[in-house]
Image 1 (cartoon, one colour):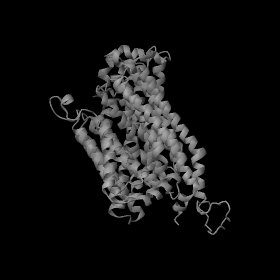
Image 2: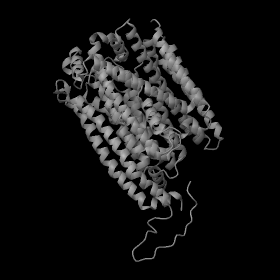
Image 3: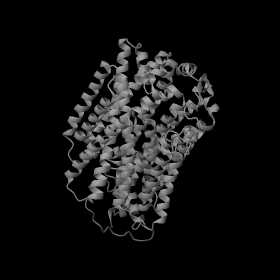
Image 4: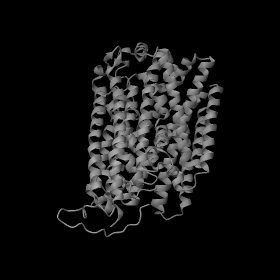
Length: 123
Length: 517
């Protein structure tokens, strides 16, 4: 079996895909909604965007800055969550090759099969 | 036009430092990996700075300042879109590109699709984007240097072109990366000092800047509201989308992910880039409003077409005004920053184009991967030279009156409509296949160029504003969906199945197992 197929069978790989999707999809939706609403308001709600919040500090400029801040927050969160959650899973998925796959995970009531493959050390 | 000594001295210093770095890098650039990917030796912070350097063009600094000077708030909208465009780059592409490719965007498509057609399509997409962008930057370089230092347009284009070729041919990606880093430091330093001067002038009170700018605008009631530049509502949406999704299809940005050692480092470098570029645009917005507040309507003649010279003249005014030592020095320094900005961006574009020609078209499509290692670099250098000379020639032919914003908009539109859909679908859509990539690139490209030709800036006629068949200035709002439609249509009309290769690509992209080291 090719190396990648063994990785693909690990539960860590499945978990990695699911967890990363759980972060990326909502983050992209929030991003699209907040930036999209900003563009739409720039297009059709010009008076509202030009109205002053405080002494000439406008809704539009505040919203523009908030889009940049949101970008910082999503970027920072993604780097952080990746380091804490996704990277260890990816490393385990890559490192557990030939050992912990769905095929030979211990099943209750059955003998654990002996380790048959002897893998050369990974580079 | 008289030659200005002080800006020329600063330009000379910028050239001396960057060429010095190039000679240092030239001793470390032999193999293909060194030429196109700097030996994968760049750290996340360095690469984040280099991405920022590649991305913050003269259009971003001088152009956005100028548009804010002329049109107020609308000028800032493309800046906001530019910052948030790194979210899809980070969440969808950065690590996955690094894990699944070698030197170019096309590597990712070629991994799961039929190699030669997929690579050809991606290389064509790359060359169109880079070509439009490169010519735009060369023309901008010529006219800016002419205005800033008093050199004639052709001389300015030739100097820029010569420096660009020197960096790329001698120092490859390593020199290009360090030129980007030097430029990013200079540019951030320049905008920070300029923004602080603006703030100091208005008693460290941004509110004062807004209100003074508003009072001095041609149309005060509208200056701080949207609608100053983009009169048609759909224009602002289309341009915003072009910038927000275009970055994810810019070959010279995506190529930077191959210069770092791991996928994790690629992700980290986008993190740094988001931080740097975000700060940059916040500062530029202060400079943009500040330029109107300081220069007022009287500055419109100085600032020139598109307001491009508003930033250096703002510096001159803040330094003490024309003719004073402070004013002249500040003007020269900001001009030098703009010069470094231009040099770095064109070098990054040329190396991306040479990857498309030599690594994709020559080595994989024509030679089918059968060639000696050293040959690829040689062909890459020949390609870089040819592309550089061609761009210099086209910039000279087009002349300084050519509409640069149009070319930049076109580059972003093709990037978002032709490159982005096939790249994302190759990574995430199980059913995607070779025919889908080909039709996707073709649809995106033809829609972008076709709609631009039919749009007000290009369509000839007595009343091109209202008489053009396609009413918007930028086609992205329509051409991106057309690009995706092309990908889907080609895929379902072809019986080719690539699910098995996609599973392998997915393992590689998500975990880095099997990634190029």
